[in-house]
Image (cartoon, rainbow, N blue to C red; front, side, top):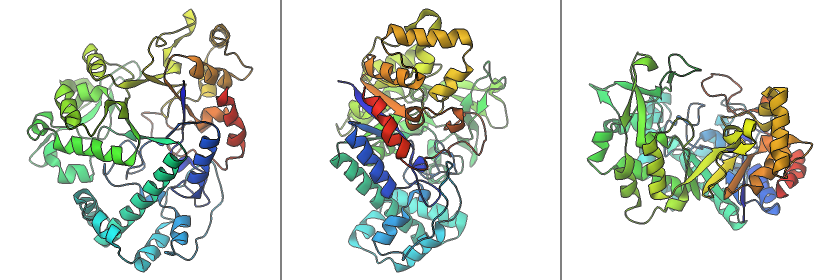
Length: 441
């Protein structure tokens, strides 16, 4: 039976405080999913970051924007909070900070809190933020405790409703991060300075390649202690989430590195962690293969496919890339151990994709859907029907595609620095409550 999921980042939840969080609207969203037989909620990364969720400032710390003021009120840590106008864009600013400070002053340390802040990685994050922002170290530990507590309560509620949470795990941290400060031996550095930057080689769209603003791993150095740093991250993510979508799986087989100050033209691919790491990850039996969903899109080599198949990982596919419209054929519709998206956070919405097709290919898309008995006057519904009917075991749809929105609601355009990236949000659930029924065909 097809397992269905919805993709909606935390920041995209409705909120009267400017950005979605772990509060009441998240619980309401879970109720809607449960009422409609949805099994999975994919939330994208929730780690601390400088606006870019796939470049974390810590793999262990959570994003402070996601603290629920409503929950702080319920816990008696703040008296009340001002509200803001509901818009379709998340607001990233310091609006909530005065309430965090109020809660910190009023908070009384509990046994649970004292145990939590003994986590070495949380201590490192508090020290890192103290050096950057000059606030009390305990303040940052407190914020992380509140975040962890609110998140785990939300996850527990989802599980009680039969909903499993899929979290996304980035591959690299940011250059300026807890990880590079306290685990510098895990990254390629010389005399305390980074020697390489992560990225991609030149291609049709980028003649100089792409530079990602992230360091690359010191693979040989990490082998010496059996990849302890990376194994720890995986295990922590599987505490936070029921399943983890592993971003940039190609990077576990081989990754591209560019000398600092150079372009992608001077970069090279190097072998990565491969079987040695995954054997170590699965060795004690605490991590199960089925808990991981790997993102293996784009330019992957035969060795990457062999690594994926060796462990039997669930992979993902994007219909926008897999449908051969000229031949009315889905190139990836022969495998079942797959999670299918019409498009994910880096893609156009269904309607955005449809709009840029020429008239001939618009008709071919409609014919493809007719041949698969999925045609509907609304192309997004036809695509959702196909996701349900195709052989992939899991189908995940973005909220934007449930609502039939165009690219004005796109989540992210890779390689661009736009205020519209990572900012789209719902104003309320009214339309979503009605339109999600189309996913129950």
